[in-house]
Image 1: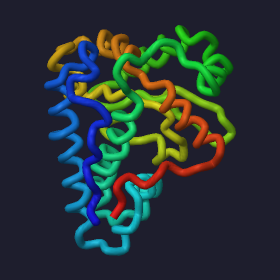
Image 2: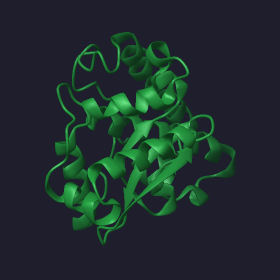
Image 3: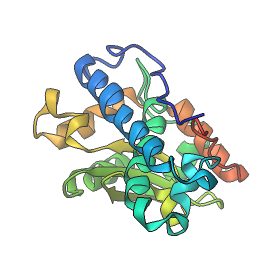
Image 4: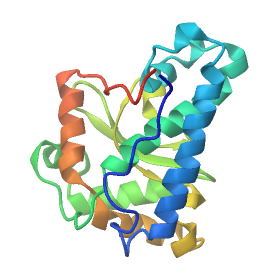
Length: 214
C-alpha cells in the first residue's frame, strides 16, 4: 500500500480567520498531496524501503540510495511535517498551554510569552522556505530550532514536538510577505492538547506512529 494523503481533521474554513480556506485547500490538497505522490514514486524501485514508515526513512537518510536520497529527504520530510502540522492546529484553540508542555516551556524558556517571542523570532529569521520547531530529547529537554525546506528534527536525532510552516505557501494569500504577522496570529489555532500528547510520547520513548506506511 502506498503512502496516502491524510484527510484534514477539520473543514478547510475551520481555522479562519487565522488561516483562510483557500490557503488550507491549496496547502493540503496540492502541496502535501504532491509530497506524497513524489515519495511514492521515488520508492517504486526499492522494495526493501517500502515497508518503512516515512519517519524511519528521514531518520536515517544516509541509508537511502543516493539517487533518491534528495527526493526522500524533501518529500518524505514534507509528508511527515505536514501530517503533524494539521494535527497540532484546531478551531477555537490557542491560549496558554497547560500540563507537561507548559512545565517544560517554563523550565527552559521562562514565561510563555518569552517562549512565543523566541519561537516567532526563529521563524521570522529562517531564510527562505522552512520550518520553526520546538524539538526535544527523550530526557524531556526541549529547544527551539529552525530547518530549511522540508527538513525535520528527526534527521538530527531530535523529536518534533511542534512546528510552524514558514514556507510562503502557508501564509502568502492572506499575509503576503508579512511572515511575522502570520507567526503571531498562528498561536490562536495551536492545539495544545495534541502537542502535550506528542511531548508525552517523546518522554515515554515512543516513536512517532507510522504515517500511512506501505
